[in-house]
Amino acid sequence: MGYLFIALTVLLTGYAQVILKYEINSVPKHADGIADDRLPGEVTLLRPLVLSGFLSGLLASFTWMAALSKFELSYAYPS
Image 1 (tube, one colour):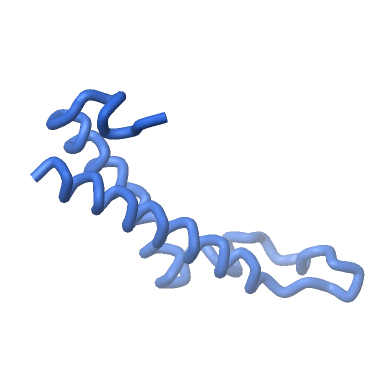
Image 2 (tube, rainbow, N blue to C red; image 1 turned 180 degrees about the vertical axis):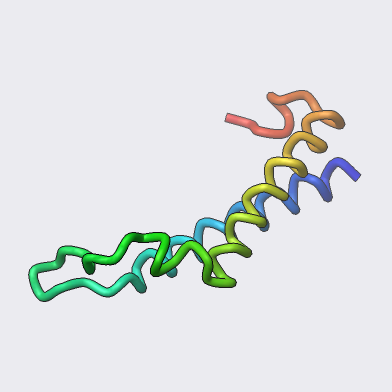
């Protein structure tokens, strides 16, 4: 079961990172490269993909804690 927690941590963290990066890159920019005048929350924070990215990151933290309850840190996160 511990290996499942590690795999879920990796998958959920990767999903969150990719989705949030994708959504931040979708914020409209002016020709000079500066983001639009709207607040980031108006553009991205309430979009379903962004919310799923945040939820995925939260679930990843819980699965990581579960993995650490099964394995030593040096085993679960080898350097």
